[in-house]
Length: 463
Image (cartoon, rainbow, N blue to C red; front, side, top):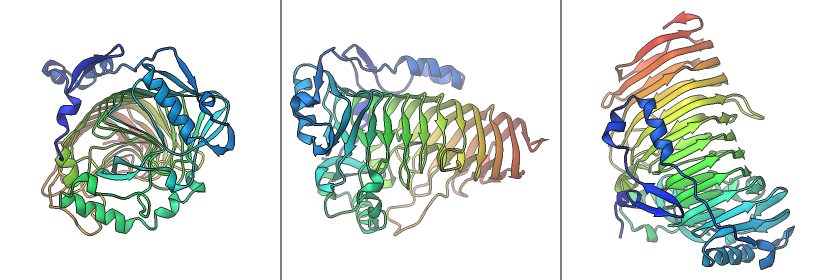
């Protein structure tokens, strides 16, 4: 049965010392000045804690020689930890090759100093699981690390998680995926049951590095993620999520750093993203399928991060059909990294099949250099290509603020707003900001109402 998943996130309870308060903020908080909501949101985001028990994977037969496949040892250690009531599954010094790792409730996967989890390049090592692929639910390859319906799960430690993306078959899938991708989109429009939307082996929809699906009380902290096949950290339909102090290095297309999707109460802080695609991309399902599930991403705080990759530093969309609201982006830097220049600082993208609403996205105190396209861009005309599955359902985008931006070097415009004749962008405010070395000084505003510039200069001239 395919059901609306709103009730899953609207749960109150207490687990392992964490009080879950799902749903939206109280009305009084919502009526406050936007940034006054942040302390209340953060007070509801409490990382899980775990019993002290430790389960070293070598006790369960793992060998850190970089050649032995340790999938079964990971499985045994995680199951033992879960059965004992929880604790820490420890990956010690060494290089541990493995297939898919499935986390269970009350398990903290600890990647120790000088430890590497290296994922197999054999697609057979990734069984079918229930997941989303570019915003549409299906049965597909397990992510390299996966959990579903788990509570109190973590991936921590200073070690390395290596997806071997460029070394395996996954990047070759990019040129072969289109028939599968079109089939999945058509299945969603035709309301084919998710369990009948089967891909995986013999198909070309590549897996993510980490997907945590319908989980509560999530922590990803300290680890280094390298060479993913696709998106790196992907919490879907999760609540109470903390991602902090991680470093993501990934190359190629479709290798976003962190993609919270249809998730609530998310804190991303102290992270570094050097990616071939978006640093952080907030999503909420795609088109017909996203509206069927109908769960927004909301109450998300992003702060003190460094963005050194391509495309958007903070992106919303384009898969946003369940809605995105109450996003706070502050005190971050955006700059050229080891390989790429950023295309955009704040990038909100959707199109006329998505439906849904993006609202209350607030950014402040952002410093950026070497922006290769537009600094701030909001478009409702993003990538309407392909076979045209699904009805026209125009999205709405409203109440976007950018304050205290300092941006030097922009190849195109400082601000571009590109709405639809049928759905204007509404109430975008840019304030107290300075843009220098901008190629096209005049902002580009189309089908947008209520746009205001207060104390903003572009190339030394007041807007």
